[in-house]
Image 1 (cartoon, rainbow, N blue to C red):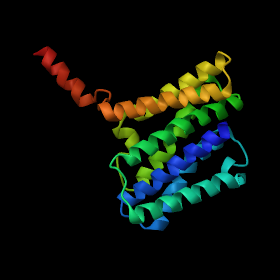
Image 2 (image 1 turned 90 degrees about the horizontal axis):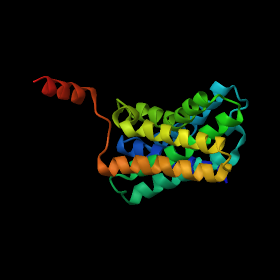
Image 3 (image 1 turned 90 degrees about the vertical axis):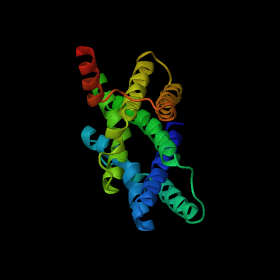
Image 4 (image 1 turned 180 degrees about the vertical axis):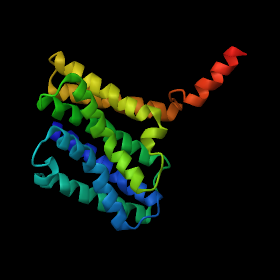
Length: 210
């Protein structure tokens, strides 16, 4: 089941890469490049840190086939139809929720310490989005503009680690933790929630002093 979940997360990130390329007026090849960049960069960074060889995607033809098919399918779809305004944010939230949990599972399997598990899970979840936005010329990336993005991944990583320590099965822990990440991310989007920014804190400080 975990591999199926991972394929879902990778597919979501592949679609988000094409959608980001579409918004940036890139050609279809650029869309496929971003599909791969968004899909595999987080896991690649995780495996490099954990010194895992070979890299996971180099021997998983199913995963690569999913990325290509979803990428091409999204390109064809956008050729004839338009997607809702928040479609990129929704598919990105799906990818973030699943890939974060898979990152936590991989780090636990590698024997990483609890803090390292959390860090690697968050890096696995957000790295693809950061690279995608940088290649699209968007700065700062979504990660630095939307406060609840990395925090949602952090909450999911902590939830997965806690459930693992309590003896929950890998599948229930993955479903609950991924659901938590998705709920936090989408809730923040639709309710307009975010952490106070430094400018807001300074403004409040001045009001209190006055």
